Length: 283
Image: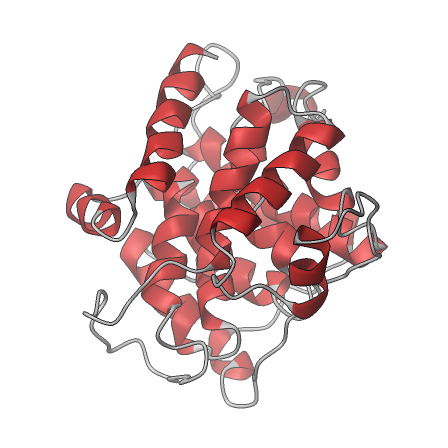
């Protein structure tokens, strides 16, 4: 999930001051973590506490209340501070930016050989979304992001060993595009150069997730993926968080970028991240 956190921090200063170039300083003094980081941490916490719907509700409310000024959307912010535990039919991109930990508990090496989705872990993706974002578009955005991360783990070797040969990067991107277009209906045929001139702030899954995936598809490494996402403009921190979560799985994260991102996290957030790293290694 560090890829999502990095994308959020780097994009934080550009959400309301969009840039349409890849030429920018990656970590500025005024960068900060936002709700994207807080809710990604909350998702990991919920999984470690059981991964059921109530765990996600408890975690989102707990961490949202601990960081009330992190920049939540209006309805989500109201939900956090209410006694209501019911979803509110959101199609916002929050379900996609926070989902990355779910994709790391999807453990199945048979996809490359059979095309079958893992039986353990996929339901975690849906649960994490539908406790708030139970609109079909909200669920689809989380599923598309998780699918892209899961497939990227094959390329990186996370599941390919012992079951199928390691994919090439080109094969990964072709499979990702085909699967998400055919199964989830997103249009991934556009290029960044086609999107960039007219793209503007969009808080919906359907107006953010396809663009974030395309930013990954056109990338050459982790840093390039983050720069691609932010160069589009729009909801920069969330867009880059989604792209970063996919790029982490495909490329890994350079140590210097990871170490720099840790400087922006406080002790409670870093504590959950460290517990998550141990949890994943032992899972």
